[in-house]
Image 1 (cartoon, rainbow, N blue to C red):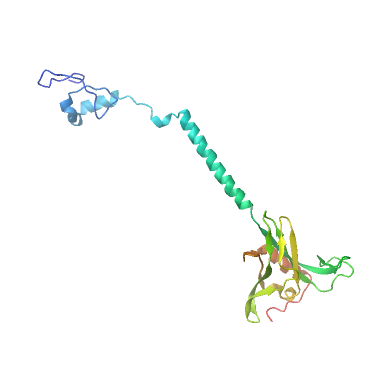
Image 2 (image 1 turned 90 degrees about the horizontal axis):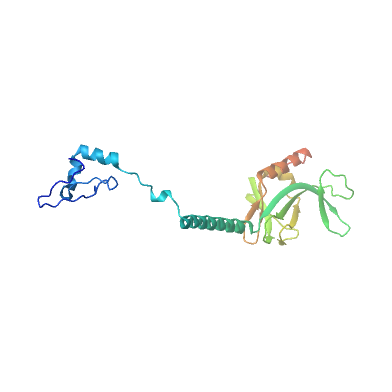
Length: 227
């Protein structure tokens, strides 16, 4: 009968907790522990009287909370260091536009917007490429050039001889280079690029290149294509 201890034959009777359901406190003979598998009524009694104990993971100790907090702080610190290292580098922002040149009182050449009525400005229009160091490390503006949509003189790329290159640019500094070699081939220009001392390529954005071509159309510069 359930709840009673059967005799083992040697006048020794003892209550042993259920090995399969250690939380139900059901007594039965130690030599018949396996028998609970074949006794549906006894299994049901165990299921009804089993006490659900809280999971050890459901309650956090102060040590656990401190460990989790320390892991969170460590992750934030690592993320911040990576972000800071990413910012702490040189970065060139490249733009190109159509300009005219004018000589200043100091004898230097300056570029002005092509449609400004400025005396002594050149009649010829130039493509002016400007590189701004938008990063936190010095970057050397070493050379510039680009690629064609259609080959020119059998070449898919072009290099422009610099007027004042190479040029070291510190944080926030900029430098402009100009050429008249591209003015009549604007539509054939696929990409305008600047290279630093390590050979890294920095390009005029696609939108910036489209704006440059639209400027050429607005002032009706004749395009000679790839001739």
